[in-house]
Amino acid sequence: MAPCACCSKVSIADSLVLGAIQIMIGIFSVFMWYLLLILYMGQIKGVFGTYEPISYKAGCALWGVIFVVSGISIIRATRHPSQRLLVCAMIMNILCMIAAIIAVVLTILELSSFHSVSYRNYGQAKLGREISRVLLGFYPLELGISFTYTIFSCVGLCRKNEDLTEEAESTL
Image (cartoon, rainbow, N blue to C red):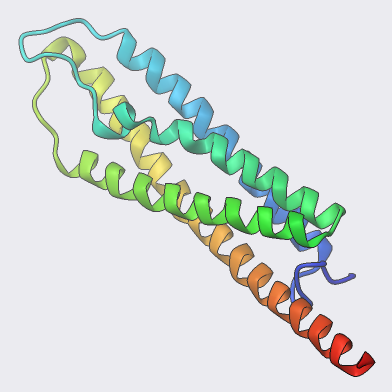
């Protein structure tokens, strides 16, 4: 396999797979947010109120849009390599890492503190917490993919700049 433009360690196929996985994780997160939206909108105001966790209020699952855009930027930078696209993909992956870390923290806070809800909303709250547990498994995966691509693209950009510097010095 031919090496990717970002570095010599990752092949083009590997970069395309990383981008595709990011897109799939992002789409899954957005669908889970939609499910949570439907779930929590259907709550009946009970004695203890409704259950609206902090990760739902912050829209953590909706941040999957960032994952989709980052995956698209990886695929675009792999297919049409240029320094501008590589830097754009690296910046998007840094944003993905930040979003994933914040989502993990908010989801852990949500799962660690469970306030009582009315009997009518207990099933919805329980299902919502299970969805949060599933999403909690995907956020570290997204963090790992973003971190991997960012490190390799940063190394590749540094090597590319060194090669350009050496080439310019040799022509002088």
